[in-house]
Amino acid sequence: MIYGKKHIFTTSLIDTGVTDLEGLGTLRWEGNKLYKWVQYTTGNNNLPAVVGQVPTYWDTSTTDRQGYKNSIVSNDRENNDTTSSTRYQNLLNMVPAGVLISTPEDMEYCWVQLAGYAELSLTFRGSPLLPNPRPQFGQAVTTHMGKDTEPGGAFIGGSLCTMPMGILTPGYITGYALETDLAKVNSMICAFPF
Amino acid sequence: MPDSTKIAFRTSLVETAPFDAEGVGTLRFEGENIYKWVKYIGPNPGEDTEAYTQPWLFEVAYYSGETGYQNSEVTIDLTAVANTRIPAGVFISSGVIGTVDGKAGYSYPNLDNFDGLLAVYQNNYCWIQLRGSVNSRGGGVGYTYGLTQTDGSVTEAAGLPDDGQLQNVKGGTDRVVINHYGGSVPRGICNFVF
Image (cartoon, rainbow over all chains, first blue to last red; front, side):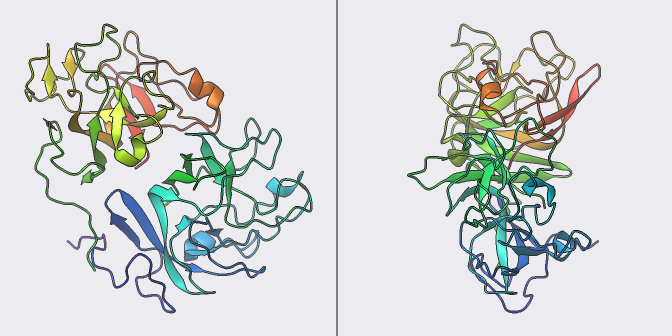
């Protein structure tokens, strides 16, 4: 019987590749951290990969949900630039992929972190829906939907925010906040889907 | 490049150690179960006058304070250190039996009567279970039934009992750490963060 878990890798964790060097979707355990080999796209808004940001699986439309299946991710939350009242109803690019640990170019391949301790390059934000306090220690966090909390606000790809409370909205817990001080490097326990 | 998933261990799953025999944070895959090697820094068995703040076998351990996760340090007392609210795993060791005598005596748990078994001494190391089927203390006298939290709501977290008991899920953003399915010997499916 062949053991199905890959143990030998071509790349280091911070390597990127112009070709699929590891096999898309490959998982990799390192100590108590888990990583996944994915492809990064800058999306429709040409958003670059930034270490410490959190891309989502890239679905090109609500009728073509191939992002998770194809292990392709992006910081671009396209279609989430509507009013705050409908932002959570777009249902596009909402599945969090992991934390970027390298800076792939458009359509290059890289590792993202799925489990374990991670430091972020953006501070946690409040939920787009009221009440929208920033997360506190230990609180569940989710994908921020791309625009600042006010309609017309600045685009902020790759960020995380407090889970909206008490409402029937789709949401994926990506992990749990650890350091949330605005003046410090924010950190979390990753709990992304495999 | 090989990965660093450890596959050979010095200790059995029910052993404890007064030193870091495996490397804190080490994960261990055994069939469908996953375990983590941690340091127990909570109250010493027998020293706390409150019987419920003892590291009983099959009790849920919590990461201690804001640095507990990074350092893989757990406790059973949710009151001694602020921000102790992230469930870590279930104690499965039985390194301490009866009164403290300064030495760890190992024995496999008696599932017919595990109420009297303590898991680990203060500042000793042990395995806790993160995933898979596990005995639980749900349903017993003094232990709330079932599912749980960690958060999603700081208000809820602040209302946690101080003994590592589990609570029923209160909302959609709660962290479910055990799906409890009862029985004469209560069991559950655990799902703690790595």
